[in-house]
Image (cartoon, rainbow, N blue to C red; front, side, top):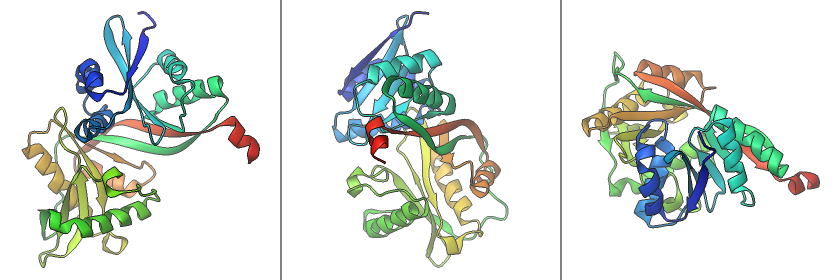
Length: 283
């Protein structure tokens, strides 16, 4: 197999013309680039996008955030990780997200080429739904899809979620990772919302459940399971062939919950953060 060549563009439609079939070939594993590119397409904003052609076929792709300067990679071999590090040299890269082997290979290559320090900061586990298995007993109540009139409540719940996971908010709602999603409350019989679950629009038959949040004082009552089942059922009813979600592998409660509901772990992802040599010298 030839070493191949990386190509890049800021035109989302050009990127999709080259990589669409490749990304759709593994919708669960490629769920983040699929949803991110779709968000760019619908917004009309440009992106920093690239793909690798080897022996006449697209073998890999990347997204490089023009504002965040974070890179998301599809699975790569060590040689491919080295070549994309060469391709991105000269650009600002503050972090990389990919499956663990790819992310580690890129971090090592980026260190060699730039002198930047690389630190693993986040581990996440990717799950794909097998057979949906609702809990028994199932908590009383109902699911309700949020409407425009619920926006103020939605912003508040998402803010609480960000606080709970120590994630910084986006400058505006439109720029947040929540803006393009559909949200469902699980409500008790008297109409009180007790848990919330979001889901991405369907792309290539794939829907990602994200986020799932229950306030601390309401946990342990099955509400998160009910909200997750509700959005998972809705995705399947809409024709989704791949329903996925991410979980923090260090949280045994959420991982056990998702597996009881029928979600099967398929990959481990790692985020590496980079510190430039000149920044380290001033610390």
